[in-house]
Image (cartoon, rainbow, N blue to C red; front, side, top):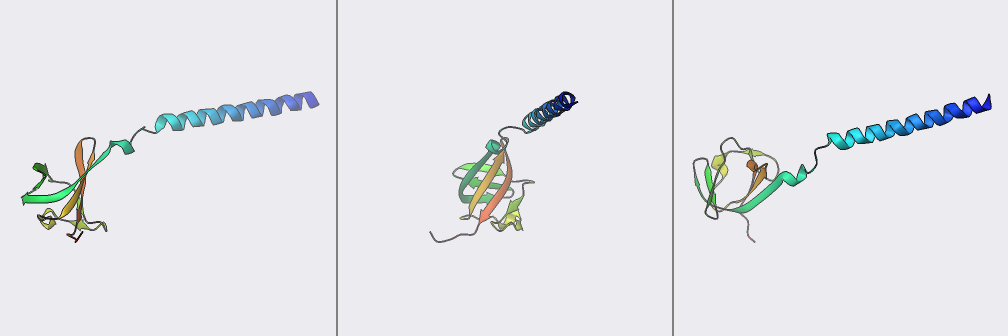
Length: 107
């Protein structure tokens, strides 16, 4: 009787180990690697603004349909971006995904 019980306990432990390995493999496979590495940030002072285009260091960026916010998270419009303001453009997968606008400050 004792040998049968010991065999059931070993089988139960082995099943627990297999279940743990299976769940670990599922979590590792389902998580997309390097998602955080896809984000790129471009910082600069706005040179000029023309409609939905802003110019930073001689390059133009089209902000049509891009969310614009201040550091507090409040939504702004593109009209709130003026020359001399500091902006951060956040890229994801090669496209601008959001814009953060800072008020001019003395540095």
